[in-house]
Length: 116
Image: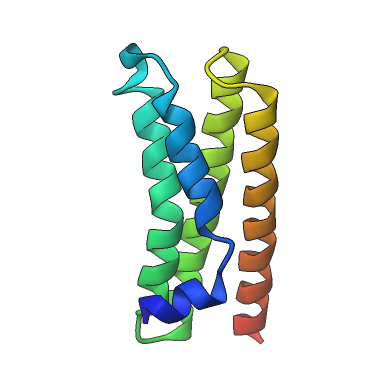
């Protein structure tokens, strides 16, 4: 089932990887702070979509899509905060934010389709 998930969301991984690589540039003292939060939120998005896809019912799938949507918002917030405190730059923020907005739109469209 996970293979179908990735074929349904082919653009899904770039920002997760971008968020991970972005945190490699953060100072070591952020390893258990901002780095951990960004990586956890980034990993949570595809994990929740895949987990929901593997569930037995459409309402469960929708629930996990909503959780993934929350993780997108969380990641967006952490990336914005990292830029505001000087850990990342505007270019990185713009790139990841653009990808997150696209994924968010796709998830919302899928939820609407599943609800009809």
